[in-house]
Length: 134
Image (cartoon, rainbow, N blue to C red; front, top):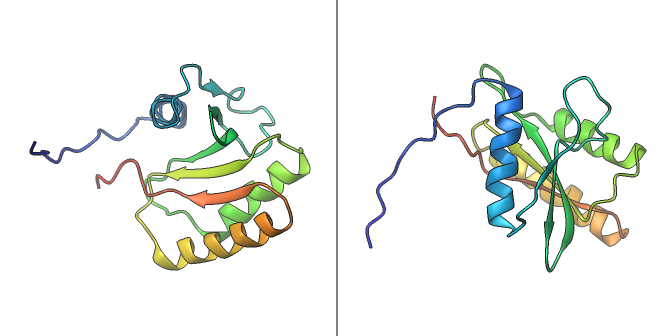
């Protein structure tokens, strides 16, 4: 079978990106009922979407749709702090972004995740971009 590369159209706004993430991660983790966490303007405790994976448990997805900027370390730290502060009941916090991949950011996230796992806290993963169009 040959795969033909395609581009995914960039979501028009944050709400569309959150809905897309809910749909995508619902499929990835075999959760037929992914849940968006409130709406813009509400306190969300660092999580925009919840999905449940059979072997993992509840996963929080923080959706970061950027057009002219990129995901930075400070954004990751801020979302982790929010989830910690609100005691968001998750096993993993995924940061889904439209930003280009960044090896040094991924390395920092991996170290943070390992440190948190050793303390029995939720882990953090910086996912590759869903939307690689420019």
